[in-house]
Length: 407
Image 1 (cartoon, rainbow, N blue to C red):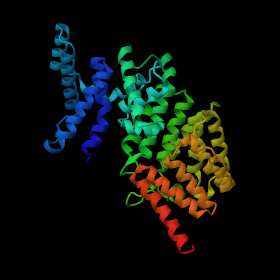
Image 2 (image 1 turned 135 degrees about the vertical axis):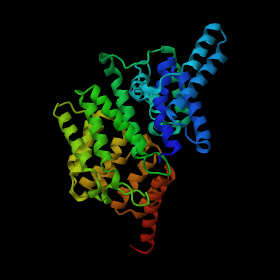
Image 3 (image 1 turned 90 degrees about the vertical axis):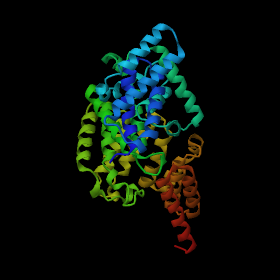
Image 4 (image 1 turned 180 degrees about the vertical axis):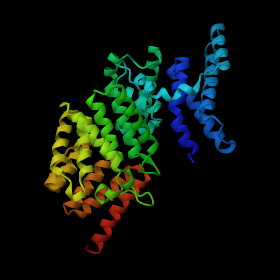
């Protein structure tokens, strides 16, 4: 049975979409919906869920909107409107269709890309400010200010709640795709919490990616992103053990991989690459395809993966890409080559736990056990995901015991 928390997270963007559609005020609606979600979280566990949770949330958010308008402006016109809203709450039936509209709305070209993406992750993905800040590698306070400014800008623009015309969607598409990518990434490898993954987020990202592709079937990057999600999500059944512990790619039982998703992902990326316009999502999907097509970890074509990461690094200049390229270089050319690529990367990634994790892995391959222990411990201290922390702590302990007994 779905938990109250999971249900609220799933319904949140539908509620927000319905309220924004009716009242045409994103900032106020977002606050009202947050209050409604809080009310549900505190009353449903003891009093039971209503027969129609979506309608309940929309109704409560609508009342909050009416109360807010009464407080802010006591003029007769506002009172009449507020009364009308209370008597005629919006029809929740349209909620299922509003999430994609929210994504394009939050990715308005007047907003900076970083602000648009952060706002969309909050409104559509239901991510916390802390989770969004972690994805952008910035302090939580900085991200809170960024989201607040974006909400104020969106309110001032008063844009109609509807999908933009086809010719205007392209200017927002890059931000929308990046949002879906981050949403999927947070779902596949949660930045915090007791579980390694959040399938509600990754599943929602895949659902929305399918909808974007249906709306823009000729765009190869849309197809590339969908293929990347499918090919990556196909490995999820083998990514955790019986107790939920992390199982690294090299140790996964590939018989558990979802072959239906792999087949679909391969078909989608093959079609996209056939257009001869490879972008960053197609490149990442191609890398995922190389992994998924290898029958065993030892059969992986690391040289091809290394070339794809080099291309990806040239077009994105993303430090996380460089980090992954270092792993590919180590597998293709030896650990020294991978460690060489990490030089200077600490300045760009700071104390990010993935940097320490990769460096620990490469130092172990190079025979520097003590250095690997230090890095694994630093990585464990830097992650807020309990499953990942346990895995990294275990790696450090394994090497320490082996070193102690001369193994």
